[in-house]
Image (tube, rainbow, N blue to C red):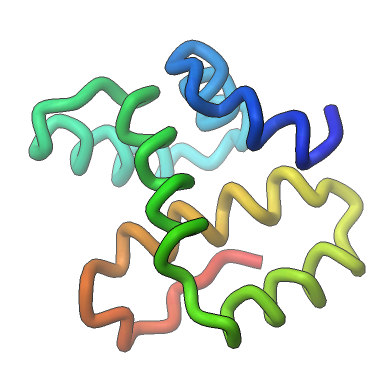
Length: 101
């Protein structure tokens, strides 16, 4: 699936959940699940919300970095999702750099 198609369909919780599990990163799944539960949301709803927040709040510098990473990626969708989730999990100060390539 193309990145644009994935993002367009990400408002569907089942697609968002499937995408999170499809990343195959158990630590990331655990962190997202924990945060979703803390926020009173399902994993799919939280993941969809995280992607929306990333799209709305990421800095120009982050977008440029993402574009560079996408240009070198075998799986651009995975790179984008991982960056979006890492961005949101860092919290409001975003001073840590736990961005997943």
